[in-house]
Structures are given as C-alpha cells and as structure tokens.
Amino acid sequence: MSGFVTLDGVRKQWSATVTVGPLSFGVAQGEILALLGPSGSGKTTVLRLLAGFETSDAGRIGIGGEDVTATPPARRRCGMVFQHYALFPHLDVGENVAFGLAGQGKANAGRIVDALKLVGLEGFERRRVQELSGGQQQRVALARALAPEPRVLLLDEPLSNLDPALRERTRRELRALIKRVGITSIFVTHEQEEAFDLGDRVAVLESGRLEQLGTAEELYERPASLFVATFVGRANVLRGPAARAFDGGIKDGEVIVVRPERLAFGAAGVPAVVRERRYTGAAAFFLVETDGGDRLEVLAAPEAARVGDRVHLAATGVLRFAGARA
Image 1: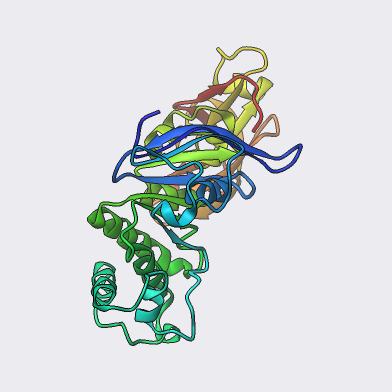
Image 2: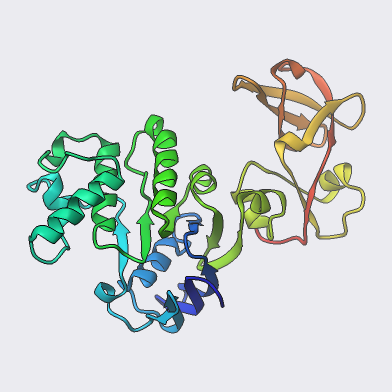
C-alpha cells in the first residue's frame, strides 16, 4: 500500500453486527481525499482511527512512512477540525489558536500570527469568537489545527454549520487554502457536491465497506456498484421489462441505471406521459410515467415538454449492474 497516509487492512469492530473495514487505501502527499457516505457508513470512525482517538482491531495505519497504529494521538501530528469547531467562547481568537500549543512564549506568538495569516485573518488575535461570522469561526478552527504544523489535516463535516448560501463560496476558499498550504487532507462529508468540489479523489463508504475510490468523474461515469451509482448523482433504476425497453441486451437479473441527462425526448422510444415539470433555469427536471407505470426523471431544456404531454423516451447511455443491492 503506497501513499503519504495509508490504511492497510484496518478494521474496527463495534459489535457483532457493526464493523468498519477492513479498509485498504492510500492518500498521496498534498492530496485532498473526501470520505463520502450516508450516516452510519463509517466515515467519522475512519477519521478517528487516523487521529488515534479510536484504536483499530486489526491492520496498520501509516503516516509519512511511519507506522502509527499504536502511536498516541498527540504524537501522530494530525490537525483536527471538528464539526462544531469546538472553539472556546471565553477565549479570544488568538487564545483559541494557541490552545494546544505548549507554553505562551514568543515562538508560539509567531506561530499564531502565521496561522491566522494563512487563513486570511491577520489582525484578528484579540477579536471575540462571538463577533465572528460562521465562515470566520471555521477559519479560526482551521488556523488552530494548522498552528502546530501537523503532517495531516483531518476535517469532520467542516462546512455543516454554515448557511447553504455560504457553503459554495466557503468550500472554494477552503480548497484553495489547503492547496496553498500543501498539507495532505482527509475530510468527512455526506454531501456529494461538497465531496466533488473539495476532494481530489472521493472514497465512497457504505456499511463500513469501501465501495469505490476515485475521481468525481470516475464515480459518476463508471460507478463500481449499484450503491455508488444511486448515491452519487441522480439515477433512474430499472429492472425486468422496464429495463429491457431501454436496453434489450441485458441479462436476467441485471439492473440498469440511467442518469436523467441520459434520457431524451424523441419521435420514437418508450411511450410516456409528463406528470411534473420543475424549472431550474437553464434546464428543467421532468417527471414522466411510462405506459408500464414506471416513473423516471428526465433532464432537458425547459421548453422540451409540458405537463400532460405524450412523449417518447430514448436512453443515450445506460449503466448495467448484476441485480445488486441499491
């Protein structure tokens, strides 16, 4: 297993029925890896195993070529940004960043200034935490994690506390900042858009298993399982006769997935009726019902159809899976 951060057969047994792993993958130096999956998939457990807050039951964890499987958290040199930032309201910004740095000497004062400069908060040392916006508080938490000069940055749902309107801008800023610092980073999220925007690669987890690890394009265009296909992006799942109507070559038990943008209205194809239309600006989502009773989502130009129209559907591309779980 190669990489600056490595997990080799790492497993955590929570109960007779709940296990995370075994997991094996590597993260390159300077890479940003997103851990994506639904609640309970094991994302935060992986982060805590890397930080040393949880002890693995099997396998090996490596950082920078060093086996840290049994190394205490403080000696792993991992910076952690928690979901709720864990800032101290009774301390000012500088004191929050200083927390975790030994002593209060001039060297530490310099590192506090440098850390705040890295995140664009120069001169904020004496500001109260309560005076800051949510985005600024997130950057203070990031500065505190970077101040000890960690080898790896770990982030647990770093943008979940921000208003939706701020998330897109903040994640762009966060990615630019991490890339400027050049630190190897691993972050947890349950939102696909966030994983795709922030991560160089994305690891999709489900029920403690690694379903797929790859770029956003690889996950979307070439999903390794039915779960990945349906979890990453919008998907129409078809079985049996409904599937054969779009792909006559499927075998018994196979399932097909068709993305909404891969369905098109035309002069020929599967007959259907438009039941709903949701306008989004440059395009619209149409909910159509085939004569066989299947409901499918189609992404097309807003003027492509109206509610109540009789239409014909053709698939411009399908994904096949062997009757797997969704």
